[in-house]
Length: 149
Image (cartoon, rainbow, N blue to C red; front, top):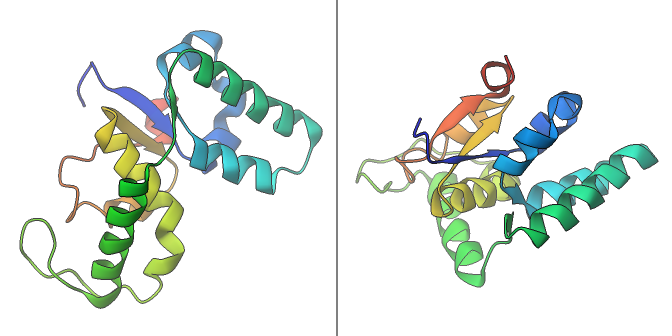
């Protein structure tokens, strides 16, 4: 993992490790609006909702809030299609068919945005993001357990 890259946490990492996100760590992170959407839409208490709002406002002010562009949506849709039907990857080899690939939209957008914004993914669900490696071989993924250890 490159020292210059910034961490980009997925939703599960935020939920499981939110008490370990110190102000110093938070200043070094980029935040995905997709992750904040997931946190806000699924939040079960007011404290989590308030934290998501704080993360959004703070990351936006310092220029670290990542929002997918129209191109990100389009390219991600094409990648999900290739996964779904087992078509060729960026490396040219076929990928296994993944019939439920349509449910990976948010993770795919997070992965693409991490790659394009010089970030690495921090996740408790490494397998979810490894599925994108045939299409994004330079994507860096680290387990949340290792990151927060």
